[in-house]
Length: 143
Image (cartoon, rainbow, N blue to C red; front, top):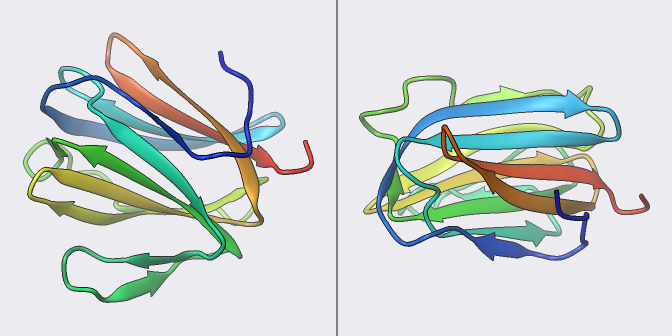
């Protein structure tokens, strides 16, 4: 497992995939956000931001999530429109860092989730196989 870093992250592989699951969990010392796919973990970026304000879809409208900071998880060449029917807004204000995870876009091969964070946070990203998953963990910036 990689170390936490107070920086943006990217990775994944070439190819198209369908989102099949989304999970959030509180762990000891960090919070976890997981996206599950059907065939591979496509190219992704995780960008930290100073506010929990996110653009929604291609409309240009914005939404403010719970917290004082945020992170935008973008998946390239992916969709969940016909393969994911679970919740699209997870609210857990009792977690260490992750207050809210909300689907902010699923349009023309770009899937995005906005994450409202209690405070600025460090993160680590990695992928798992069988099933293919993108894992994003958050811990406080002082950890």
